[in-house]
Length: 505
Image (cartoon, rainbow, N blue to C red; front, side, top):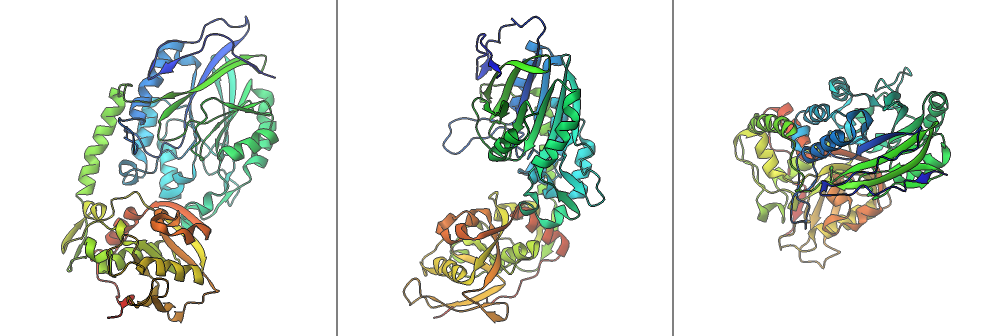
């Protein structure tokens, strides 16, 4: 049983004010693991809903990391990231995640494991980012069909303050269903616990401590700790869990630091004879009281300039205006609503696609179409989700969509792959008739794949029936980015076929 560190608490509230005492067992060595996870491109600070001030962001976390290195000595610090780092915000999404990699290089990360959202750019782009990183990317359980490792490294052995530290990277096995299938074609995501056990048995004899850098989620990390006691520490991600102090399971310390660099994970270890003899761990809040790191801010500023230029880039043209007016998209089918729904269905190959009119916030004028025009039209961070639903549940969703007609309703659905009529004079719940999927009538007992945005898929706007659907793919791909790509590929955006929602007079 490992003894918890009995010396004075390291206190860090907003800024670093004290350090742990330096009294060590005579032969013990100290190391400090600093860790982040699920940052999702939050390189800058943000103001969460309901909060009064900024928090999080790598730009402030970098300052804390530098201070801790100065206080303890760089040779004692191990800086790790547990995945989902380089996708999520415009600054990364429009440049394939390169800005975050450059920032992580500047921060001096020692190792990184792939999260499921790293695959959203596709394998070719991700392989480029792995090469751009000045730190190893670890993924022990992701293989190509020929048996080679996708990331190039399964594990790393690194000396930290005289301590030989082994690190094994593990990626969520369900990644193929939480990104677009084309992004993982030809890749195998093997059982992470089985791979971890086999890899640990090889590495453990040659290291003093062994760490799992895991993008598996807390519940899977607990299983991992129970199954592979060779690990000393699991630095986790994927579940966005706040572990204020490490959880100990089967003698293994499990740490996770929430999301968006809102916290910097801090784990202090004293190591003697290949054992952790004392430890202390907690989360350091990354608040507005922490100064922004000048070097990191400079990198962000450079990329923001490129971002503005990218937003003004013309991606296509159109001879018609696209109706995204509030009164239109919330009461009837529009050409813009049809286009958005078609883009969703085309991107994932589903039977049907639906999107809420309330998510469409602006029209697009005839003439040149810029990236910024699409972003103004689709301003929310909505991602594409595919579910399998019964026909009766789809019918219920359509009834929910039109229940308030003729009143405006943000839940009104713009659709693709499905047509129907609406009798607004009928009572709500009995207004939708003549529903067809393609050329065939909707089979209430049949099953269909339905693509939508993550807001609707989570039951937003009262669509509870989606919460009971079977998840097919949670792609993580931004709707607006798919729209940009579609218009760029088409060059000239033309009006899609209408007549999908016929409202009887």
